[in-house]
Image (tube, rainbow, N blue to C red):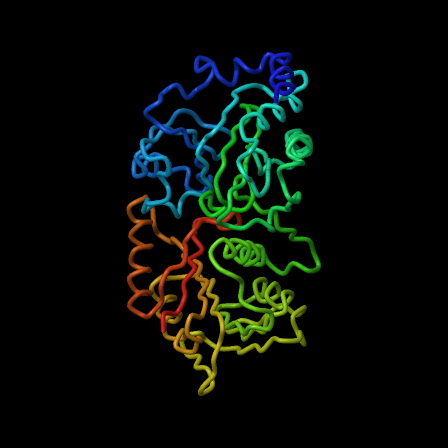
Length: 380
C-alpha cells in the first residue's frame, strides 16, 4: 500500500482524489448519482428528474445525468424507474480529459485500487460514457484501463469474471470513462439495472441470420431477465403473439426453445421447416389453443392499442403454466407527454394484475424505441 501511495504522489493524483475543491461533489449532505435516460425519452428528462427528487449537476455524454440526491438510491423506490436505463451511486469521480493526460491509465488504475481495494468485489467492469459511438478512442482506453486494473486486483478477485457471469446481487465495481473524465461506483448489477457498465449490450444483427430488429429486443430482454430470475429452461414452449416477420421467433429457436407463433401475416421464408416451430396463420383475437395446451412463456410485441393487446395476453395466459413468464412490449402510441406515458403504464399494470399477472420488472432496453419491455408472471 505504501508503494501505491508513493506512486499516486508521483503522479500528483492524491490531491485530486481527496481535495473537494477539484471535485464536482462538494456537498456532504447529498449523494452524487449517475443516471442514464435514453435519448428516446430525453424530452421527458426534466419531469423524470423532478419525480426522482434529484438536482441536475451536469450532463455527461449523450444520455447521462450527473445528479445530487438526498436519497442514496433515488431510483430504487421511484415510480419512474422504468425510464432509467442504468444508474450508479458515485463513489469516485475524477473530472479530467483522459485522452490528453499523460499516463492516464496507470494513474486511474492505481487510484481505483487505492479507493476500492479490499471491498470483496466479484468483478471490475469499465465502459464508455458514449456507448453508441462506432468509432471512439475510449473503447480501447476503457479496455486497457480494465486490463491494468485487473492486474492490480489480481490477488483479490477469485477469477476475472466476464460480464454475464456476475451474480446479480453481488457487488461489482462499475466505471465509465469519456471525454469528461472517469466516474465509478460499487453496487450490484440488479441495483444498477444492468450487467454492463451503462446497461448497454450490443446485439449483432448481421444478415443472413437476422430477420428483423425485433430479434435484438428479445435477445436483450432475455439477458436482462437474468437480473431477476433464471431463464426458461431449454426446450420450454413459447406462445408468440404477432410474430411476423419472425425476428423474435428466430432468436427463440436459436436458443433451443419451442415456439408456437401466431400472426395474420406469413413468417419469413428462412423460418420454413425450422425445428421446434409451429406457425398458425390467424388473427390473434380469434386464436384459441387446443384444449389442455400449456405454454411455459408468452411473448407479445404487437403494435396497436395497448389495452387491446393486453386483453389478448390476459386471455391466452390462461394456457400458461403456474408461474409462467410473460414478455410484453408496452408501446406508447399517442402519448405526447410524460403524464400520458405514465398513464399508459399504470393502466396496463391494472389490467395485467386483474388478469392474474404480476409484474417482475419493467424497463427501457437499448433496442426499444418509444416503448418499454414489461416482464410479468402468472400468479396461479
